[in-house]
Image 1 (cartoon, one colour):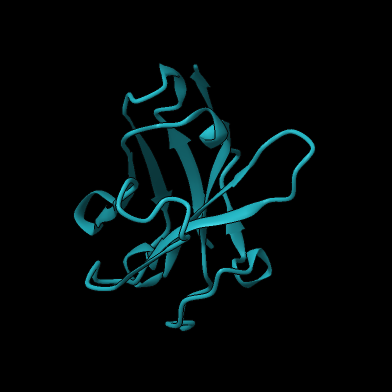
Image 2 (cartoon, one colour; image 1 turned 90 degrees about the vertical axis):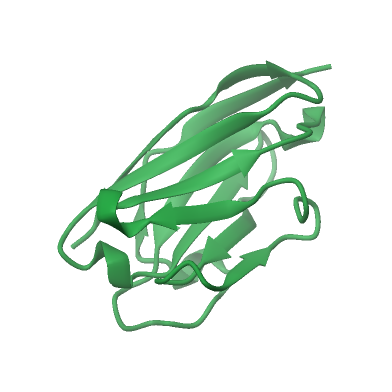
Amino acid sequence: QVQLVESGGGLVQAGGSLRLSCTGSGRTFSQNVMGWFRQAPGKEREFVAAINWSGGNTNYADSVKGRFPISRDNAKNTVYLQMNSLRPEDAAVYSCAARSTGLASFTTAAQGYGYWGQGTQVTVSS
């Protein structure tokens, strides 16, 4: 079992930065592919970024590529999403998710992740 808790959301002006953190519990956290998703009001949940167990491989949605680097610190059981050059369209509830242990491949589909945090709100003012 993996339990996830996000933090770091808030209100920021367009062009600003925020860093989201996702801290996990469970012995296997360091073995899990981790992802970030977001959902804006009235829209479907969408994939943002993912990172493999070692941090050596990452995957990004085109909309955030080059702006939102994902990283992890397995010693701290934490995954980060550094959000730079924020735009009003980036505003959403951001959730981190973990793939089940043993699933080493990336997926952009929310159904591919078995564990979810409660989400953290990001608001971007124009």
